[in-house]
Length: 176
Image (tube, rainbow, N blue to C red):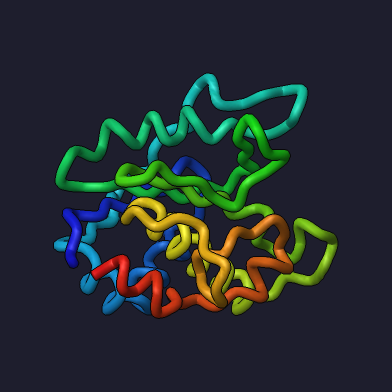
């Protein structure tokens, strides 16, 4: 079943080329699940109250609140940000989403260099795709899945690397 329009946004300082490439490589997936897909040309500013100095991280909630200004009942927004995010009950997140709402994906912890390892652009891009598909799964109403599926919960980067880029058959049926 196709949902409304999906609007992609990048926040200030985030490489736009990553989203452009994601949309090119996975265009078929996006057009299968959404009536339309747009990539907004302007960068969104960082929410003023998002930075938490004692954690040296950004709270994801103000980013999601900002995205609400760009969505409605027939559309969804997903933001990509090159900042380390957290939510109140977790030390960090790769991304987060509102069921039936909007989503945000954070890039820093998806990079090898965050852990002191040499960068691997191919692996980095695969991780971005997995996190975008995972968060959009939540936007489309899916919960975490225990099958070998992109909807598996990732508590670590190893978890992200082990799961596939695709939805399992059970999740695909729920998306129909």
